[in-house]
Image (cartoon, helix red, strand yellow):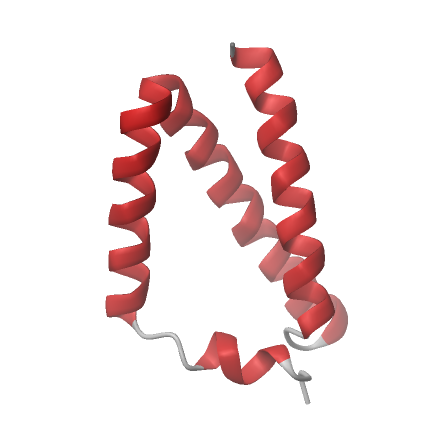
Amino acid sequence: TGGIGEPFVRGIRLEHHIVALLVALGSTLLFGGLRGVCIGILVGLATLGMQSYFYQRLGGITGDVLGATNELNEALVLLLATVVY
């Protein structure tokens, strides 16, 4: 059993992913330009990697996993922004 975060992740449909991607891409392009889009792509890839890792290691997604992924992504964005800008 994955934990409290599992139903949240499992309940997301393809339409949710598409809308979230378009909103994120649009706002990133508007405020960060192409550099921001590159950072967004790298953070997205890191998120997929963390998801894969946590599924293999813990067998699912918990609320703690969602929180940890959020914090790691925030740190990654700040790190990449200092490098790119």
